[in-house]
Length: 308
Figure 1 (cartoon, rainbow, N blue to C red):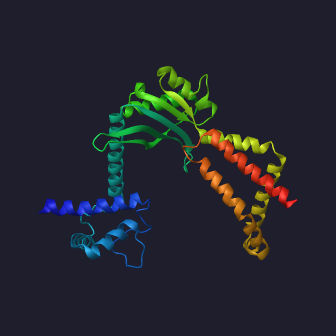
Figure 2 (cartoon, rainbow, N blue to C red):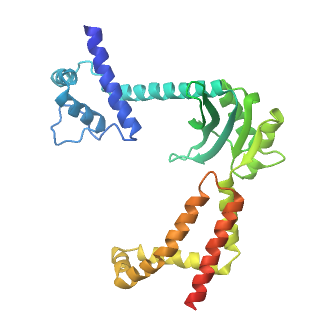
Figure 3 (tube, rainbow, N blue to C red):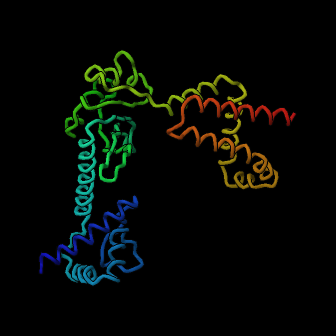
């Protein structure tokens, strides 16, 4: 009976933590205590358990025992919450790694960026093909496996970190068939970049640069060559800075004149937004992207000629 009781309690606690983690909601509040009155914010986790206790007799009995006996074993502490989250994260990661090993061949995607604590971290994403022979389906998967904290950003150190992580995940480098990074010299350098060093160890790991990053660089550098575009972008940025400095200036944006101006620009903005979404489509190629951008430029030229 005792074993079944704690099994039921821990199952409910685990599902509450899983729900909050899945919804990307913080578990804890500023003050965590079941002895606080109903007007106090005890956090999402304890609040959700209190809500569950209204309808569930098992959780109601458990919370009542915890409130009446402060030293009673509760499994509601922040340490237990973190332990549950780590266990679930480890289970999900191991499940993904089993799927990757089952597929055998995979593609690597790594990208580094500093976090809010100003620590450099590198994200690890693996692309593989999942084949379900029973349902006769084939799906391309991209699985995020976590972050790798790095101390050096030179190509040699990054390759060492990548190889150590692959060894830790029990993934054979010889099964890698593609590697995808951004276009920085450290990652994409054809002489001593990360992709070149990986290719020396496995020549079947084809390097595929990031098309979105390439297209963004092309757009930025192309815009910098046009004086009109530089002036336009600078003017828009200046207007935003001026009007966002105070609430009174911001209210002036709601005047009928500017409202009419925004209505007149709405068709143009809709067209730009539609082209932007098409450019972000993974199936988009450079030929179609060039045609869309040319059509957008022709539209702007037509509008200018009508305005003159």
